[in-house]
Length: 64
View 1 (cartoon, rainbow, N blue to C red):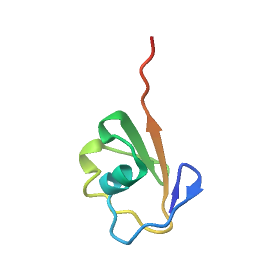
View 2: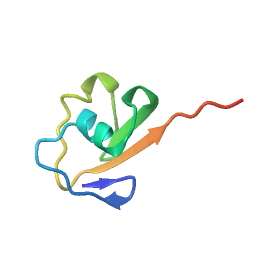
View 3: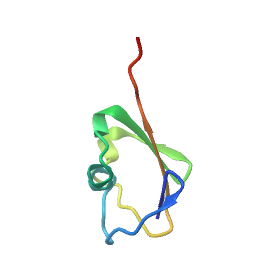
View 4: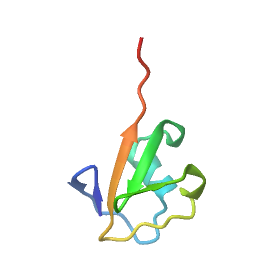
């Protein structure tokens, strides 16, 4: 699968939540797009990633 433009190898059956943890993201502070569609946070555990998927993770940053 491709995450933020970079090819990654993960085991089959990985959920979005698990991928976020492995990539070092805090799921409460990101938005995830899977194959050009935004995924609702409540679906991160149920959404299972496949080898051909394209994932974009956008982090929210505070400003001052």
